[in-house]
Length: 393
Image 1: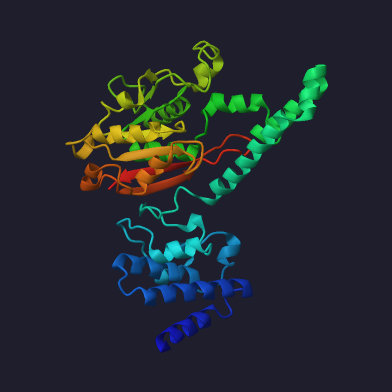
Image 2: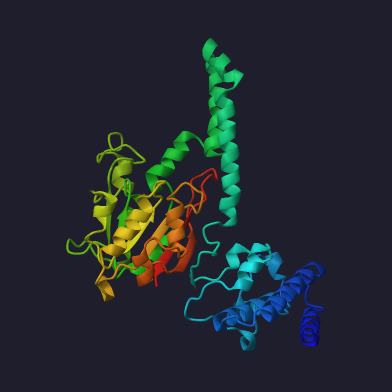
């Protein structure tokens, strides 16, 4: 108790004159929580102790700059050179302390360390924007049901009142697509990006990081992401498309294309400007059989088992291989748990849950989160997708 009292006294003294009253109270609470957790966990691993030390340093270090919570950022770069802490090079899972602070809403989701080893308790797929969005989506769905069953709509249909029908339709468009977003605006976005949009930062990251390996995209739809990546790759390398090497190969079963090829055929402007003409027809299982060494990319996969089945088939395709022929990296672009993409089993798989005894034996369910990036969502702020990059440990 004496040692704990001395530590708390030291932290309080460090905070004096350097924090606002609001921030000092929060910092003291965090410090007390972290110290109590550390003292109560004598069996804590060395990695967890290291992360806790970094976390405590971040949360309690004095600063002459603007309060970190007011800047909405918190990085070690703001520390003096002598106090800068080097992050561990080997990815570790989130410590019990970090998870406790996050669960108590004292540690923001955006501050969670990346890269890190994923565990079943990791909150990666339940980020705040998605949680708020799912509540909003449920409310929107209820509102649409109310409109469709409203007396106003029935009356307008009965009287064939075109003016009233137009008003009701505009209200539905607002609920479904967002304020000021018309069906045409939505379709224009689909033409250029598909169901969710890439950014220049994403294209640069994928090409720079995986340019030597190549990418296989499964469920590519009309191929907007494949086209953008291919153009960016050849623009950076200043090479003409090489028949012996395609940076990206794209597949789709052609059953649920966002935009009908009968309307957007190869002679239309959108198809020539945004679509990838190299999309091959194949099932999601067959698509990855011959793609050893490439990175698997899933962009906005449909709800259901397709996404996980593709990942498992991708890993199976390189069993017995190593080095540059090993399949070990997955890029997933979509919403998290409870959203519009994949299913619960897919997210559980990346968080370390066992799918089969063989997976457990080989450690195939141990994944490292390498990167999280914001995507360009559809106008109207109704989508909550992100890009996640996973590497099998």
